[in-house]
Length: 194
Length: 387
Image 1: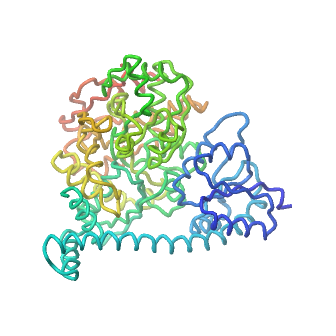
Image 2: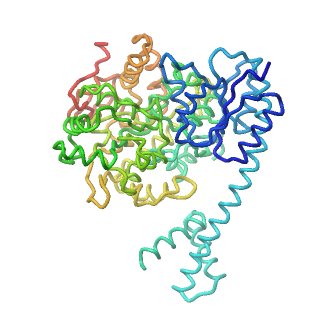
Image 3: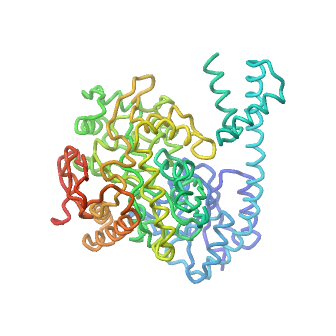
């Protein structure tokens, strides 16, 4: 009876959280809770006392979960990161999908595997969407900085836009750095000199 | 370069410098290996990816390989420290309100008075909540050692990722914190906290980060291991020259590495730290060491000290824990890899920890080794022969 498992998903983004929960519920796990607020993570987990915690491998707040396995209070149940030595391929697939799972001690592998397989599929979709979004955001932010730096150069040296960009690119190549780093340095310097 | 390319994990901190410099200044290429530097969002991620083989080696908190080898925490794997990457480099800070309270209890605001500072903290907050980056870290060991010795038993250690430390202080979730640079300085700059002690004020020569790898990977890649240890040792030697530190800060500041302003990274690298917003910098000798006085030697006695502390806290058998801890610090690999490169090597792989209040000559193969200072703030020593 998969529905008996109490599952907790740590995911601040509501759209991503929805994708994961829907996947789990469609597959028959009803008791799924989302924790979006990272600040309250430890307390919420203690209150919920889940059997299984699913969290993005790249979530910078993951270290907070370490307190769960380090805690030695009588009330706490030992928690371990999910690693299946009999089936390392499953563990690797989870990692590739960006999923880390924390499992309460004593839970049988038969009960965990189907949840993980469903979660892996969902995390793959989520990771891909996120990677695309992050790349788009970063490109936008970098373009803004580069445009500002171009403006600084154009004004200071009385040159055109193409020439300003060419100058930054040449400097970056000479110094073995990225254009965005040259642009950042220029913007910072011009702010200081104002 | 025609050798293998190694996947190296690191957490964006100033003390990841030896890895970054080994790559950027070409030491790795000269030793015949390529480094694929992979920035990681958390220590858990470093640990898991290393355990599962996605990383070959990694920048790790010095207690982490020992914890993993002991099976503490959520994943067990036999992980060894091939060398130490850096000694010292942490700061202890408090929320601004706590600092004001400490002043009202007579604290002078000095950065080198661990006893007075600790007493003022204890007088100000009965049961402090203290932020640390990870349960298995030198930060926890230093704090516990300091507060235990001063008689404070009811501090709560809360794990907070370093980049979120300043926010957690601002939100009132923490009274104090211990964190690696630049994150203490970031808390100072944002005005939410003040620095009260460098980690070196508690233990003058604490192994902070190590170069970790799985034992089975080490065994099956002996040539790559030697090249890696040599390349990173050479980066540490370069970083050990004071004149190179500003350039190191410029390299680390780049977007692909720490992506933070050079001015903030300079503080740790130059050992000149403003302890509060708009204050003049306080100079801290040996704030962060990468090379001199045996800083990269993975002393088995340091592993034993960490093991003994872990055993006491987790109710483990002391002798057995120390044995596992010592075996995880690979002085043998260090010696084999560097014998023709270093000027000298310690004669022994253990020393009495805490015995040197000042630097002093030490028994070595060629008689040229200077070690220390390595004193604990309370003057205690840790002697392997006495445990």
